[in-house]
Amino acid sequence: QVQLVESGGGLVQAGGSLRLSCAASRGSFIINGMAWYRQAPGKQRELVAGITRGGTTNYSESVKGRFTISRDNAKNTVFLQMSNLKPEDTAVYYCKALTMGKEFWGQGTQVTVSS
Image (cartoon, rainbow, N blue to C red; front, side):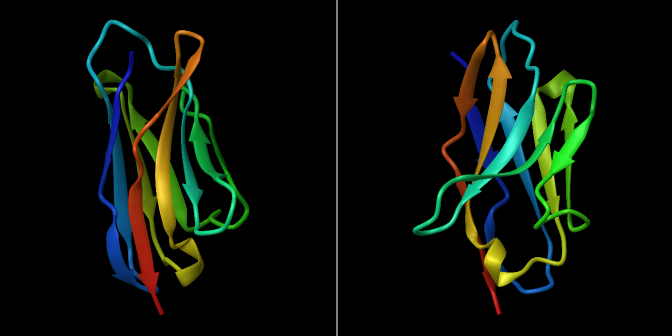
């Protein structure tokens, strides 16, 4: 079993920045893909950004140019640097890890952007 713990959420004004972190529990497993998703009230969970073990990234159009995903393979940690935040970025952000042929999810961290 892999446990993911997110941190770094909070309240920020529009135009501000936040950095989310997601650390996987220690173990002798190799994490392949990692990603950040978000879910706003009344909406479906959506992919924000993903990154392969080799560092290839992809972003949703709504965050491209403002968010940057990165990872530290040695620490099984993924980051999401969010800049120029907008009120529409308000959501619970979840990280996901792919390993051992399974998906694992974190508990989520709230990001609130005030206008």
